[in-house]
Length: 453
Image 1: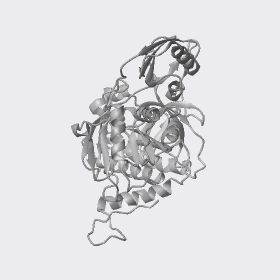
Image 2: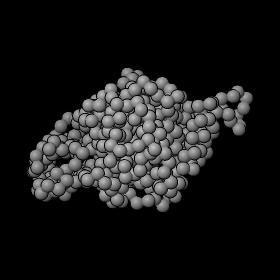
Image 3: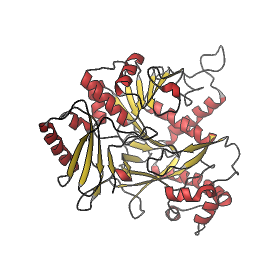
Image 4: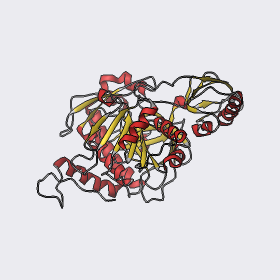
């Protein structure tokens, strides 16, 4: 990977001298290059060293944690067995705790405090706080992601996502000189451009053709629409090196579709507004490495026990560095599948798949619950399907909403019904509806499958 460190001293180009904040980020990035090679056991040891410091602060200054940590856990440190006895912090519990999770007492050098509100895609939006320290770690993990995947930082980055900035509307969007705060003061980068996620798909493609980016960052649902549109219209994006996805669970077949249409690799990231980066895609595989230097991530079964490789469970996360609004054993609302240790040499724990929210689980007539295997590419081969969404209303009734370029023929309806039976099961009644568009959430998120049960 060929990168140029940005010098802040005029007349000195090499060796470059970074700004103070940039130098600290580089120093932290150097540490991450070492710790990623530690064993999972050694990482765990250091995580608990940080956790015990955080717990001491919480017991002293947080009424909520004074109550829940008072069950025999001492300030001498918690064992992993004691750790599993700490109650899970659900969204309901977080909302009820309210001010009891906050304090004006912070350790020195935490910097300014910022307020954040989640999108509320679960129906339960929450408000949290962050500090300059948590933002710092967000930026360092962003740099790690660039280095892991050997991004050509001199290229152009195109971002299609939700933003409240009115300037992001088509046809031009927003233009910036660099790739954002993470690289500022550290690396010389190309420019970046941003477009609102609510822009019609044809205008998004035209914008990308004009901008000729090397990288695209967007939601998986947007990327699916872009790839299918380009496939249908024969549009190539010859400047493109790779595509990156955020914010939504990655659907089956999208990696293959991007390679087929554009000949590029898809890199996915797992993050939340409350906690920052949780896992980054391995540079050598499609699975994810937990960012253990920033969070302790647990995947627990229905009995609250850690899942083994191959098992799917609830994602429970502890932010190791947020003293403004500590989230200890916080239930994110997602499910994930634990993976085997990676052969890439990194000791960072592996998540094989990020499965998505609880409401994205299909319930079968015999009571089984599982994540459905959906793929728009299969539907697109049958009929001109541009978007689809499946909604389970009862144990046997599933509504299928399709955005189409033309009305369906009878033969196509029959083939689509057969395909949905193959995807979801033979015991369901499907109500196939053609719609003009599918609504995204206020933050631009979209879900292929939703259960109303």
